[in-house]
Amino acid sequence: MTEAMLETMRSIGPVLVGAWLVTIVSVLLRPQKYGNGFLLMFSLLVTVIFIAGCLGDAGATFMLVCFLLVMLVLLLVPALLIVNGIQMIRRESLSLAHCLSLGLGLFVGLGEVAAIAYVLVLAGNTSVSNVDLWVLLLSLTVFYFSFLVLSFVMYSVFIQFMPHRMSFDYVIIHGCGLIGGEQLTKLLSNRVDKAIQIYERCERKPIIIPSGGQGADELVSEAEAMRRYLVGHGIPEDHIILEDRSATTSENLAFSKEIIDSRDGGKRTALVSSNYHVYRCLRLAKKVGLRCTGIGADVAFYYWPSALIREFVAVFLTKEFLLWSLAGYLLFVSPTLLLLLG
Image (cartoon, rainbow, N blue to C red; front, top):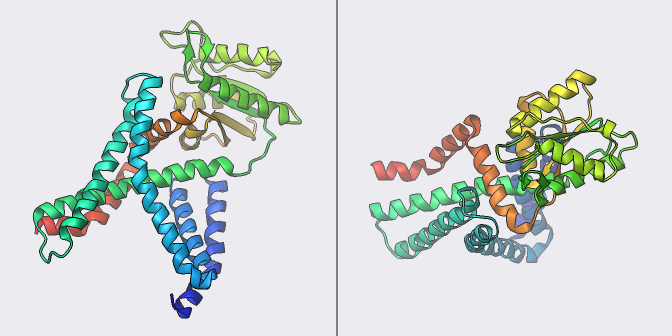
């Protein structure tokens, strides 16, 4: 790279600082905003460019290494998703939710094969057939939706590391099913353990609200099962209020808010769920008017990819996000569509 180019890359230092400031402030003020994922991706891109500029002659090598790493990850992603999907089905059960990782792996893998085939077929050719354009459209489609998923995943991970206070008036725990109708699953016990950690760190002890109703195949409500676990781990009964009517995440939040509002409308509320679930919880909390801090509990690594993909699908299918995503997709592939229709 020329010295002029390196100087231009170094000169974006203020842009770098501004990008990260905007990203962090936006995450702190509106963590449920999906656009934060794009801000994060932009900040990372500017960071790579700035570092390359500061490395001087080694900058070109640094950018090449970053590019190759991204390409390697993209090539490995479908294989890892397929392996994870098979592992998920073997360890859990065969269901649509547990097949998401496998399905996405096959979809992304097909798109990558199409992209490679497109490049090889067009190498040295001066004319483009309709078949080539359809292959290009498939490649662009995979790239676009893979980018949406990537930004969602990176943002979901990023918000786990954002600092937050450890002083709350209320701690809401989201339920997620029971074993044998009354025993906590590992997923749920991790959430309750995280709530206990928060309770113990708070100087002024908060009220814990276990949230979850009783399913048709359950002997007690999820809230009651969590209450027993909390009491068994030293949490006083008078610091626990059950929310045992809800059947969905939205109801978890809405009914828990009713409890809080009926008391003193506590201003500092934490909602605890599995780390992959926090972002969607924050979006739903905003809809019901609940101001809160999302805190994620750990989950088994093999479970995480499929769960996160399921969360992405749930967010993607919301009316607002679906419309914006489809509008962006049509804009992104419009040149190829015009060639196909022309």
